[in-house]
Image (cartoon, rainbow, N blue to C red; front, top):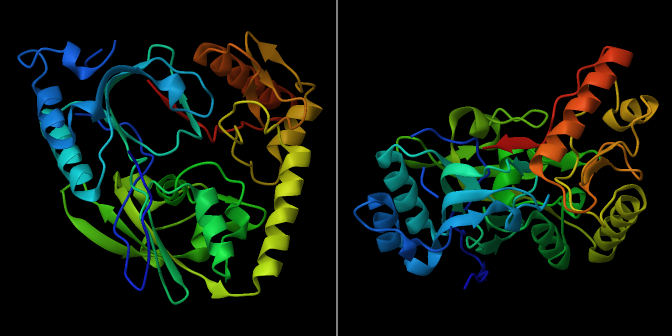
Length: 336
């Protein structure tokens, strides 16, 4: 149903974003279980994206990398940019809470789920290339964008080869790793504003900082991102990506479900070292635990609930602050 289109010589259009829940809830199976009189918003959304793309009580555990989370009242999957704009407009007009979902990383959904509308941007997969610039719609997997750039002999996205998540979500939080981040390679993003306008913002207008952006501050919806890359030897690009992948595989618990790095890096410290020094490596509540491989990750070791994950995070925060006077801030975002 969702297919990526790749073109050369033309600008790609828009795509996705992970966002804070927006205030304007509904709740078991597909939308057809809801009566139109009881669910006018559901009826309107079906008219925009089709019945098969509007689900009721969809388990969020199936859409997050943590593999936990209760049901979303409505789970909507627009298939193109026009549908995204129409869906966002309809939900905003209804006053329902909503959340824009990329690839479900860096996200912890509560066991009770989300009372409102999840707008999933996973179908926005267009990619275009013009000279040394690559434009990706927001639903494109960031790792796949890195791989495509490598295949085209374009350097700059090597740092992203192992970052889970969508291009839109990466712009939202200025994702980065191994001394690289989105701010280093972005030229501009196309966004949908709260007023319903579509506009292009240059990288200097995005207020990009450590895990921060204007996109998050102003509730903008990322539609697409254009990367300014440089021509380089494909083999050298591949070697760098292989080295970074090897380092990740050696140090990170990639074999277990997680949201990625659980905590932001505190200034002057490393979260993983503080957690290890606090004696918390392997600390476990239910099915959630501090990774024994890398203490900066909370992982689902089997059957974890969101409550388990919350309990681990809160205990780690309390202990690190008690022992070292440093309050760790979650990088993972909480929903529901």
